[in-house]
Image (cartoon, rainbow, N blue to C red; front, side, top):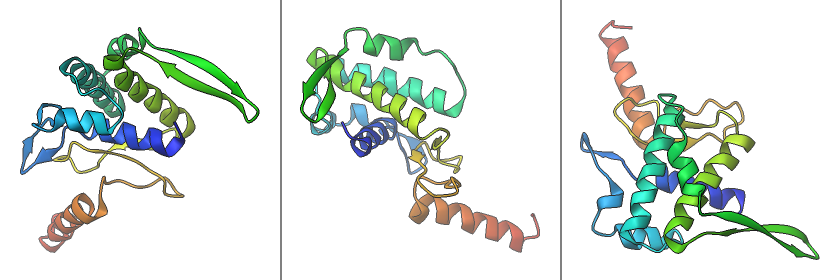
Length: 168
């Protein structure tokens, strides 16, 4: 996978549990969850979605800094391996994993690449009422919100209102 594909997959998985209308949701339980998993290259099985849920929930805690237990990520990679494929263009690494384990393994590998190549750029949205994450590609590395159009505007409006009330 390319860097952009890794980032897209990682964000799709970690952002599959949004807060909608003030209520936490789980996209892995949605009626179209199997189709969603297949659109990411998965099999769409219940077992695959359960592995993805374990990986997603562990990544949420790791990214937020609320745990250091990587056991579910290790488990997601237990039946996977990377096999080199050599061509005149160089070496390409191909993931080999059972169909219901491949998407979770790809997600863990994508997380590893992002955190290695873009250290401290994968972070939770600064809106405490949001459960989404972002990968900060801004030059200064100061992006704070999953979306400027939603959380960014909402948080700036709240700050402006507090200042208007003399709160800070």
